[in-house]
Length: 156
Image 1: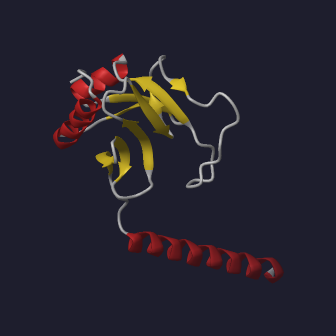
Image 2 (image 1 turned 90 degrees about the vertical axis):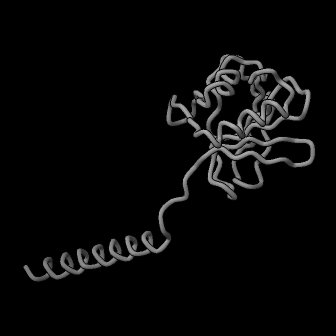
Image 3 (image 1 turned 60 degrees about the vertical axis):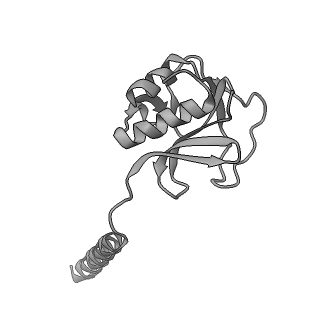
C-alpha cells in the first residue's frame, strides 16, 4: 500500500507547490491593463485602435487618410457589417509581429455600423468569441469623433 501512497502524496505536493508559485507570479505582475480606444497618427494616417495603451495587444484597429472613403480594418474582431470586404483574395502573407496570417479588411466610412459608432460610441463587432459590442467613455468618444473628422467624413 505504501508503494502507491508515497508517489501519490509526492505528486499532490508538487501540484500544490506549482499552483502556489503560479498564483504568486500572477500577483507580482499586477492587474491586467485595461483595454480602451486610442487614437494616434503616423504620417498622414490616423489609427483608431481598441486595446491596451502603448502595447501590441489590440483587438481592433482602423486606419484612414484624409479624404478616403474607406477605413482599413485589422484585428481579431471586425465591425459587424455585411459591407465589410476582406482585402485578401489570394494567399495571405504572414504577419511578422504575431506570426499569424495578416488579415485586413475594408469598410466604407459611411457604413451604418461606423456612422452609429461615431454617433454613440458603441461598435458592434464579431470575432471567434462571437458577436459583442465595444463601448467607449466620454473621453474616448471625442477620440472617435476626431478620427472620423480627420478621415473627412460627415459621420459625426
